[in-house]
Length: 317
Image 1 (tube, rainbow, N blue to C red):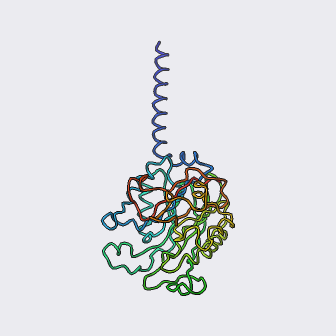
Image 2 (image 1 turned 135 degrees about the vertical axis):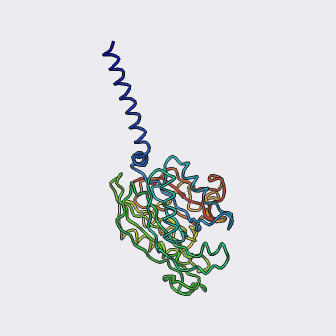
Image 3 (image 1 turned 180 degrees about the horizontal axis):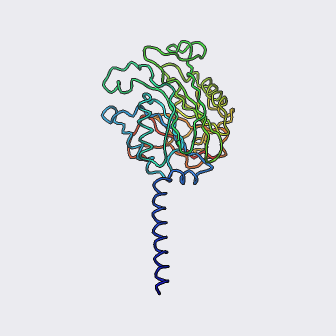
């Protein structure tokens, strides 16, 4: 009896200790376990975050998007963002993602301190700096290299005349058209992936006229960096019918998961990323397929979180 008793106690202690170990691993290794589950896919989100201004400005509440991400079974591996204010706001966002989601996040920004947009209203000042960034899950993806380039507009952007060329800063700076691409090594899949966050000029600068040129430059940028998988995502300010840029992207080998889900180049309004148009895209070259493809509507997020709806997909190697 005593020997059996001691054996029972030792067994009970072993189970207790294993339980403690499991709890410890659960708190520290959540990100690694999560990443292993999706070893053959990357969870990708794209969103023009509109500077994450307070609700009092335009009624947008970006807390809703963060809450939406927290409620997903897996957090983003890659999150491309446009119209982020500066390096300080990027640091704030990556810290919040690290604090509130499984995993750790880092980011690379196109311009650390963009030029002034020339706004004068109280809310406008909060949007006075705008550029683009790639956020990535740093406990899975390791930074290797990056490149930046400037989007094109007609030579006379206000009149919409002349050949396409870089849209240079003006009194109302267009530093938000400075694009960035980064090459990352996926330590889980043991593969390199290049990701670009893009913002092309608006109709005010006749940007859609140069959409094909901007797609060509984005393709060249990700090809320069290399990788078995290449993702270009962002705010094109151009529909799929503008200057044949979308057909051109298909010719370069990019796939559009939203178009594949809706079954056509032109999707129904349910897939619009602004009030009237689908102008935010997530494109992938070298992907074997997609799952969990969605445009994150206000109904899905519980309200309006930005002037642009996010686009998401699990991108398979």
